[in-house]
Amino acid sequence: MQKKKMMYILGTNTVVGGLNVERLTTRHTGLQQLKSLQDPQLRSMHLHPLSLSFLLLLVAWAAVVCVAVTTTTLHGFRGCAVREFSFVAQKPGCKGLRITTEACWGRCHTWEKPVPDPPYIQRQHRVCTYSRTRHMTARLPGCQPNISSLYHYPMALHCHCAVCSTQDTECETF
Image (cartoon, rainbow, N blue to C red; front, side):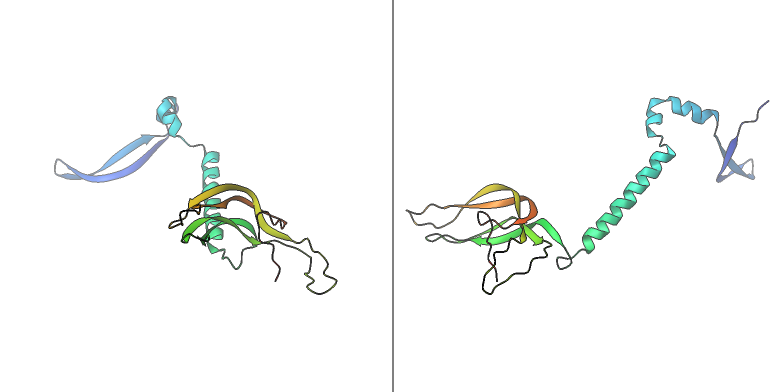
């Protein structure tokens, strides 16, 4: 005859016939657990130890990433990224309008040195610029009757380091 494994959990004290008796709650670890796994609803709630380990590892990794992202300052950031940017859109004959959009921001690694003296060698250093944009339009207030109130500007969807193009970036050197 095989003994069933039993686990006893101490419950609350109860009084039976004037005697203080510890109430014992039993839980069978063998047969009852096997039966509970046959129930589809309970089986879906059962986590395999490997799945649980993976879940804990994923939560720990997410916590580390959140701490790393929140501790990065703009001064310490290296690379090229999309960032919220606000500016005042202006056009002759209209009043200005404050616009908040997404723009490219960052620093790109280069070994080139700018040469501001003759013979003025052309440099092709890389800058943080747009790789994908969405064209946006705003309506400026208070425009004169013969002036269009439409103001067009790009909204960055993705940025990368590339040679500066005057089509969408101010490529001024200082």
